[in-house]
Length: 262
Image (cartoon, rainbow, N blue to C red; front, top):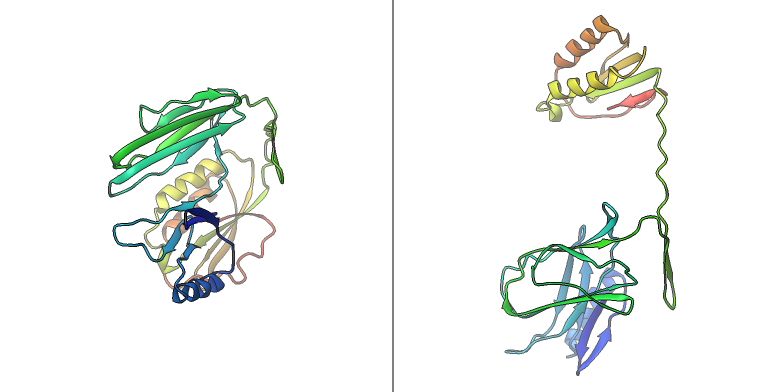
């Protein structure tokens, strides 16, 4: 979310289509009113436009976001990346962890930060003047994995329950199709490392039928092998002697019903 201070009051922004947002921003600028525009770029990057910023003055803007925390070893991990290249005149980080039973831990960041408990919330605050915030902060939120967690708000709820991980051994395939791209773009591949990986995998399988396909802009080689010691040697030699040329075309390549390795 985006909030801009106008005449001493914080005003929340409205979400619109990107092109409409740009057109509205320009129209407001021409009308002599101070707007702000937040645009999402590629990946997790955003661009904020604020106009105008008065001489020797400032504009107060709040950019808020939500993210799903990563689950580590019995803990959620919150990462706050701070990579400023210039000093901040008044730097403040305030954190609140709601409905947390176990105290949060600072895994990385300012050593002076510590959390204090207030009712069902843990809080911390870090404030500095003329500070260079160039260190990321990583907060660990320990939890009892066996417990269920429920958070309720006025318009939504969040329920968490850790499900036991069920493992089962995958049934070994009887037929495998190995697709090898021999286009010019693959000429620098580490074929020895790939062969070592394949050999390690095939050693775990019982008798298996392998169909080897070498292709680039068309299929150059296709043959079936029964993976025994002498047959595997022939497969390795064919992979090592492949000629890399042309582009990549997948037409008529993915026609096999076997397990495919690419």
